[in-house]
Length: 177
Image (cartoon, rainbow, N blue to C red; front, side):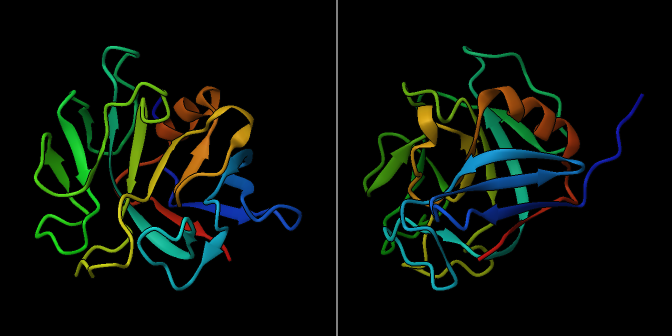
């Protein structure tokens, strides 16, 4: 039986700890980690905050050496050891995927800590890309104890398959302030 794709995921920040929250996925709600700077409407590179707003989900990546190809309605690609993401505001590839090694500052997508075993690309700072407004905002796997992220939304591994199965090209994620 084919499941209906959700049109909206909604992230609510906790009133008790601005670095944590819950993500609403249809009728389910899962705990999530947010940026160490909480949420913000004025996102800047390196501020550690999760951007407030409603965003497209561009696509997803997964580690094929650690898991099977997940089911999702999003465009999906396997990560490779040389995958990176440029976070240098002065570089022409800022806030875009790159191949490592790369000549400017970038983040490795193939990580040993497992948080990027599954990554959903949230369309923050796209069209047009504005240097310094923040890069690499993802939905990814949470660290133990829901440690804060650098600005992403992170969920437990056991919930990610349920989330991926319910989202597609028309799904948006709304991060509430």
